[in-house]
Amino acid sequence: MEVPAAPAPGPLRAFAARVLVVLALGALALLAWKLSELLLIIFGAVVVAVLLHGLTALLRRGLPVPEWAALGLVITLLVLLLAGVMTMFGAEVAGQIDAFRTTLPAAWNKFHAWLQSGPLGPQLEELPDQLRQGASTLATHAGAILLSAGGGITDAVLMAVGGVYLAAQPRLYRHGVLRLLPLDQRGVADEALTASGTALRAWLGGQLLAMAVVGTLTALGLWMLGVPVALGIGLLTALLDFIPIVGPILAAVPAILLGFTVSPQVALGALVLSVVLQQIEGHLLQPLIQARVVNLPPALLLFSLFGIGVLFGPMGVVLAAPLTVVVFVLVRHLYVRHALGDQGQAA
Image (tube, rainbow, N blue to C red):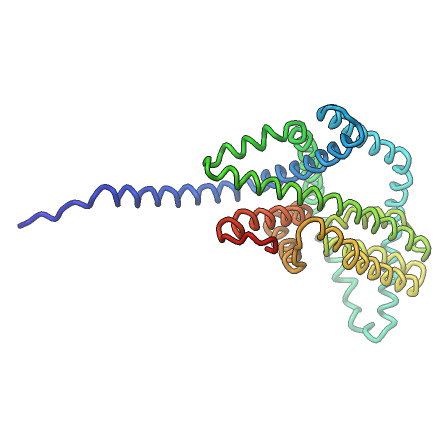
């Protein structure tokens, strides 16, 4: 009987190579998932580094100094600015926050009384019991919440320190990343990194400007309406405005509730103010930002906020917008233009 010939070694070797590639990709994906928090911290450090590098370049336009000296001067000025703000307004902001903490329960009571006086009053009778149960659950998990807050502060410190190191030697880390790629792919990757860095720097500049404008207008408008803790709410609005779409909505809730401590009319005025400022930001400030960066579809940004938040938690929500900007630009350069051969500007 004739013995069948053994398979040629070439196809077996190719099949084994494909299996190894698939296993390696799966292992890398699993490793990335396990190290997702570390990867987010690294990306946060990149955001800080891009901000510092942009300020350094801006300073060197008017002051001919070496890059390392300009970076040191930028960091020193930022530290002095933060210390000055804390010295000048720290006590006032702390008082505003304390007043906010003590005033909010009374605001909720007035809001609840106003709702009960309306046609939906009978259906709201069970609401206080549900809120007390929620407060009890919140108190039960207070330790975990405080631990999570402490972890967030640690992550923020790591991002700041890592951002300083990355901004001090950006070429070293950039070349290190490029050396991990094949020689024929380094040019395309370098172009994509340049485009994503430019987009992220422009987005950060525009977003910080929008945060300052919205926070200032919110504090001024609430002060004119007579809402308590106007400065604290303005500061909270400015910080939360870093998170597009969701942040301004979250910031509007305490403003409206505190408006009820004065009157329902003032609360309505706070609601109108919040809506007007969101419209100004959405139709005036954000288009100016998007014109300098990339034309991100609002639905894509909204879904990325919730998707990244579900996957990575609160830190993912905070970094979702800049991460979406970077991924959007990288996909456009690495896949749409080069892999698909689309050289047009509209992605």
